Length: 314
Ligand SMILES: NC(=O)c1ccc[n+]([C@@H]2O[C@H](COP(=O)([O-])OP(=O)(O)OC[C@H]3O[C@@H](n4cnc5c(N)ncnc54)[C@H](OP(=O)(O)O)[C@@H]3O)[C@@H](O)[C@H]2O)c1
Image (cartoon, rainbow, N blue to C red; front, top):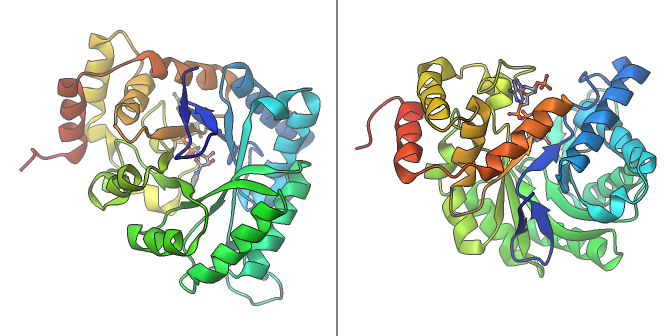
């Protein structure tokens, strides 16, 4: 698969990343069966075989089981670790952590970042995380304190590069100003069903600061494919049926699939949006890679944008 640089770092990633959110087959760690684990490992290995070299994870995915399953896949395939980049996220705390009654919340205290990162390393069974991201902005985030935690992790060789996820551009600016190292990635939801990043300054900032935008739910959790798996509450109001006929027309014109068109639409942006593929089906993981070969014209791109907006441009 084609590769691109991750932000200003020397790291290079495949044009599509693979996301491990769904590899446990359930959100509840207690419900993960050996068959789920095996299917999760198969999906990860299928992605590696199809040329994906960036693997996204988070400490909260399936209560840590997604990172454990990923670690099992690393053990199963010798040499896999050396050929890929490992990305994971921390900074969200679940309810009742560390004591009963504690609410689900965000925590960018240095103590929590250091502890969460250590725990991710241990679950995956690796020495180093290539890209560590803060998952959702902590209302109490102190950029100087975060910068101290990042510096400590980097100096200890535990993390190579850092990024953020779901940040407002202004908070990213504040954090970058405090950090001695460049932030290299911003992971946000971007798809034909979720257009805000194009207009709220997120993608502009990625261009200015040369951060790589990582697009989560690039197929709107399946709504732009053959139907959704599990939707986040924020995705339940999406109405892709309004514009899917246009996606299908472009797909017919280009002898491509609907999902290839939806992914190629993201790939065309000059900020080099990196879609994170979330299917756990090996055939779909392989099929998504075909999108990298599909170059949409500006006319096709705008046709899709206007359809997705549901109204003409001003
Ligand atoms: N930073 C954040 O806040 C955040 C939030 C959410 C996700 N993420 C990251 O983004 C990654 C991707 O998110 P996502 O899983 O929602 O992405 P997605 O690729 O938009 O959606 C994947 C879902 O779509 C389904 N699907 C239906 N038809 C499909 C088709 N033709 N091709 C492919 N998939 C189809 C898949 O089902 P099957 O598995 O049955 O194919 C799967 O349930 C996650 O794994 C995670 O790493 C980050």
